[in-house]
Length: 141
Ligand code: ZN
Image (cartoon, rainbow, N blue to C red):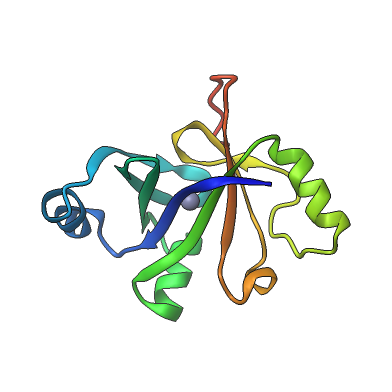
């Protein structure tokens, strides 16, 4: 089902403040920062070869990341696995009784289709499945 760990998501209060450690100290390659309005979150991606680090900063108090920071503080938010045919994987998981947050893929950052599994499926780890959207169409609504 899973090809690789695509990225690890880290919740931060401020990307500006968090970035220098990953970029200048660890010297990961900075890919860029973008805003995902549907989730009210700003995300910065850095890459360590195949695997990326995703820094997530809330854009408003409505953001799920704001909620996370309030409850748990900064730290690892989710692990994202790259998959092929995300829609079919979700149907397969649902059929097997795995609790899902997203039953259908939605648009994430960096032109990826994403879906989250419920943390109770994975011992309190929030798992994201993601697939590069090859259609090239942007839809963040
Ligand atoms: Zn992610």
